[in-house]
Every structure is written in C-alpha cells, then in structure tokens.
Image: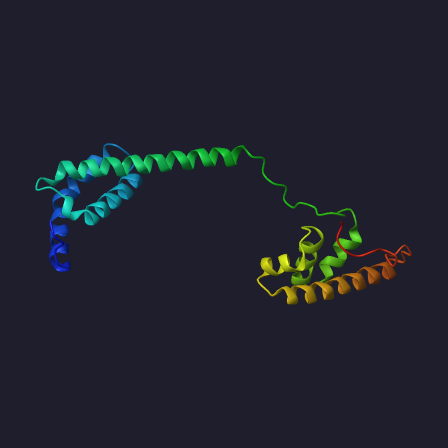
Length: 184
C-alpha cells in the first residue's frame, strides 16, 4: 500500500482506534493491572499508528497480537526492574558520610570547613581522589589552567587556615615542615 496523505491517515487511524479501543481495554484488563494496561494500550496504539498500512481489514485479531507483544515487553521490563531493585536492596547501604584520608585530623576538617565550598572540593578532588589538575578541570568543567591556578590558591588558603588553627589552639606541632603534593 502507498502512504496516505496526512489528514486521510489520521482519519483512518481515528476510525481504527475507535473500533479497537474498548475491546483492547477489556483484553488488557483481564491480563494485567490497570496501570500496566494503560501503558500497554498506549504502546499498542502507537504501534498501530506506525504500522497503519499493515493493519488488515479485520483489525481486532491483529491488534490483539500487537497488544500481546507490547504486554510481554512491559512484563520483561517489570521483571528487570524487580531484579534491579532486589540487587540494590541486597547491597549494604553506604555509610552516611565516608571519611577521606586523614579523617582523624580534626584540624584538617576544621580548615576545610573554613574554606569556600568550591575551594574545599578542589582540594578533595586533588588529595582524596588523587586527580591531576587536568582531570579536576574535566570534573568541574573548567579549563586545566583555571583548575591549576584555583588549586594552587586553595592549597595556600588551606595551609594558612591550618596555621591559624594551630596558633589558636596553641599547638606548636604545626605543619611547617610538611611536604605538600600528591603521593607518588
């Protein structure tokens, strides 16, 4: 069959939908729950629209066949969702917060909390996730040069903040001799 003009095709589909809608609803209602039936009805009508030229003169048996296939697809999707939910449910929930390296150092946490959130995130990506400035740039959607400059400034601010905390607490241990940088 040749493709009909748009308006004639729409009218043909509307006649088909009016003819098969109620029998199709009953067909699906006897086979599945109401929500799935509505979804499968919509999917079936979509297939009918797409394959309108393939619909025979006696459309109902053909439409039932399409509906059976759409229902089987919906049931497979439902089974996949249930298996995924079971898998997710069997995994132990993550800890509320996962500590980073050196999580026992209260000064570090206090110093990070004193920084702007974007500076603290830069430092976490660099120190905890072991990302290079170019990789940090991809994560933050900035240029590698900007990441490098911001990282340098954030490291300086962190160092100053830790020194301020040490002075405030009277702790003479400090980190003046500590070497900065990533682990090899």
